[in-house]
Amino acid sequence: MPRERLSVVVTRRLPEAVETRLSELFNVRLRDDDTPMTRTELVEAVKEADILVPTLTDSIDAGLLGQAGERLKLIANYGAGVDHIDVATARQRGILVSNTPGVLTDDTADMTMALILAVTRRIPEGLAVMQKGDWAGWAPTALLGGRIGGRRLGILGMGRIGQAVARRARAFGMQVHYHNRRRLRPEVEDELEATYWDSLDQMIARMDVITVNCPSTPSTFHLMNARRLKLMKPTGVIVNTSRGEVIDENALTRMIRAGEIAGAGLDVYEHGTQVNPRLRQLPNVVLLPHMGSATLEGRIEMGEKVIINIKTFEDGHRPPDQVVPSML
Ligand code: DGY
Image: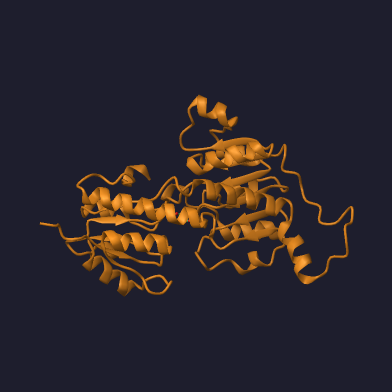
């Protein structure tokens, strides 16, 4: 007898190819418009689904999980970061959580380099001149930025993305330094030509560019707080393509305005879409709308990972990208 198809609820619009494949394989409920589900819709979803496919815009907290139906057995997150999911509570309730690591690595690392270059080479300022039709021609002193070759890059968080940034930064001639919970194996450090700093404070004080590439967890909340931001060189630049909560955004804004930090490139914000309005007014700050991993290829690969996680679970095995609280 053919087995009953799993009931899968997807909370956001996904690329068409992914939605089509999900529909072929499961009894899937897709989202009609591209807005996040309301709390009421999420409650309904966790009550009825075997599998929930949320994204980082859904808060899957203990309150929501407390309302989940008996059927809910897997939260197959469409995304790598799981800071919006209470993984420990899910586990206590016997609900597995999986994510989509690996397939966003290169795209996010590319965007990190793009932001480093955008800030140091003043790309948005040049673009604004051209868009306004204000260009009066080449001038020896116009829009002078700083050369990134030879500069010291401090990578905060040397996981997959941090390492991919390191490889790119080396190709640009930067000197790579890093701080991480665990030191990398010597052969990896050698390959990346990366210098490890046990003391984050000491690293920050000596870098020209800091890039945040660690996940958001209780221990990384405001890791770049006012005290640490003050350690940065006044000529230093900070870039974040990870999660906004790692940087104290108000402190950063104050310091850039005061000229204590030379610039920032941000793809993520402490309070989601509520970006500090003062940040938007600063010419030496480049702001992007969380698009670090936004390539069509990456989004399709994320969908493929979600499908593999669900299929593997359906076949009675552990999803390959299962997230357990001890990993966080
Ligand atoms: C993720 O998957 O967590 C990324 O932040 C999405 O860009």
